[in-house]
Length: 128
Image 1 (cartoon, rainbow, N blue to C red):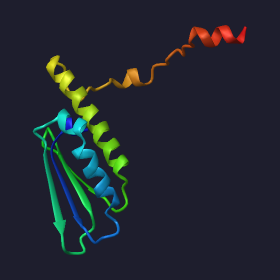
Image 2: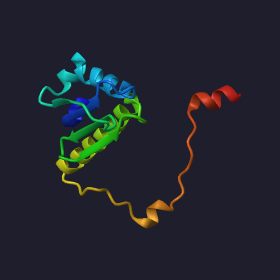
Image 3: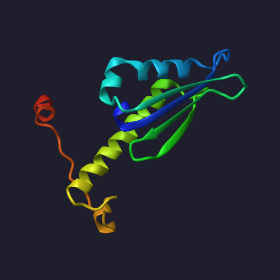
Image 4: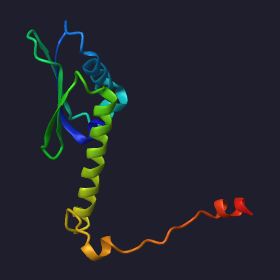
């Protein structure tokens, strides 16, 4: 997960009962495997003393920053969103390295072409 990020900032008040998501996400970021995936990723923890709701802010390697309200978003959901965006970044990089334009634009006429369905051979054999 951290391999797609350059910075993670976790903000919470330790006395706030809504910090479960922040603590879980912090634990995921501190895991050995996560740290090894990107040792250069900065992990910042800000302990607040006000009533500001818990928040997780991530900066992707391309500089895009995204903030998540950690009161209503589970840590696993945040992790999955980061992985999805990271895969998109990898795909974009792959296309750019190959000299292709990004984003890929599919011509309108190709969007309306029919696609013949395919069945795996095993499924056809079971019917007999």
